[in-house]
Length: 63
Image 1 (cartoon, one colour):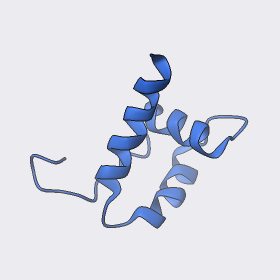
Image 2 (cartoon, one colour):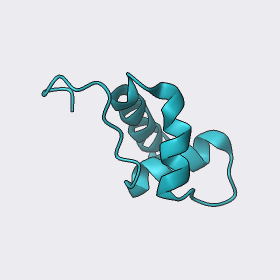
Image 3 (cartoon, helix red, strand yellow):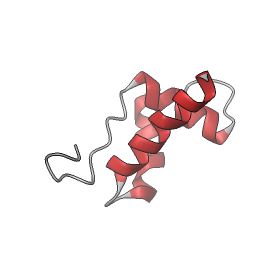
Image 4 (spheres, helix red, strand yellow):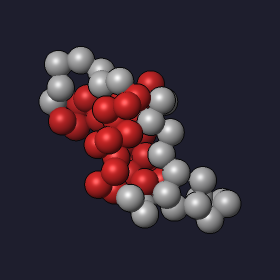
């Protein structure tokens, strides 16, 4: 995503991103792709960075 110069890619179907959004928002269950896509709309223009930080939050939690 970054190497291609594409700052607005967000793979909402990624299970890791869904889990990170669940954790971020304190949801009781992992949200479906459609819901994650809707949530990510607020990050339009910078969704690749949002994805990176969400993935990183899962790694930090695992440590």
